[in-house]
Image (tube, rainbow, N blue to C red; front, side, top):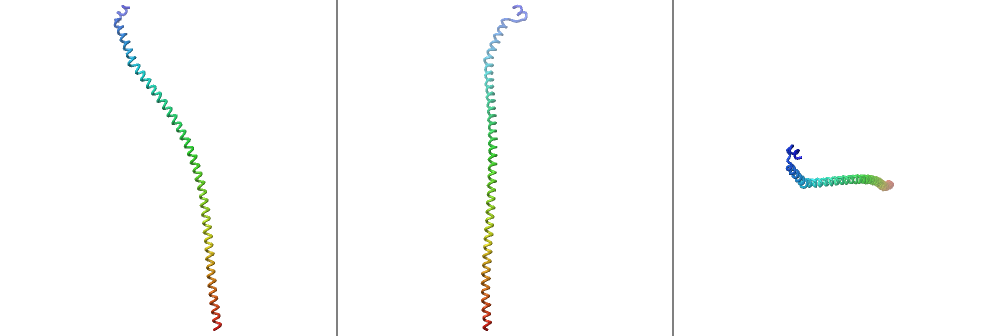
Length: 149
């Protein structure tokens, strides 16, 4: 073996020293580099996993919120339709009430006008009768004067 190592120019003491140095460097790298990097990667993985979980939770909340909003919009649409229907019914009733009130006012105005017309005709008749009576008295007085004269 010694001849084989010397044939290739390898010094076994140097080979053992290099193997020990490699072992020391390997342990140092394992302890000072691999463990912290591994811990850091584990933290990152946990952080990413937590972020994904939270994102899924937020998506679920948004989905529930969208469903809630859709339900509220449907309810609001139904309530709006009910309000519009109630307003139309109330407007129709108010229109009928105003129409009836207008008809009643028109009838009252017509009755009042008719009563005034009757009163005016009666007054004119009374004045005519008075004038006729006065003229009859004047005519009778004239006839009496003509007979006595």
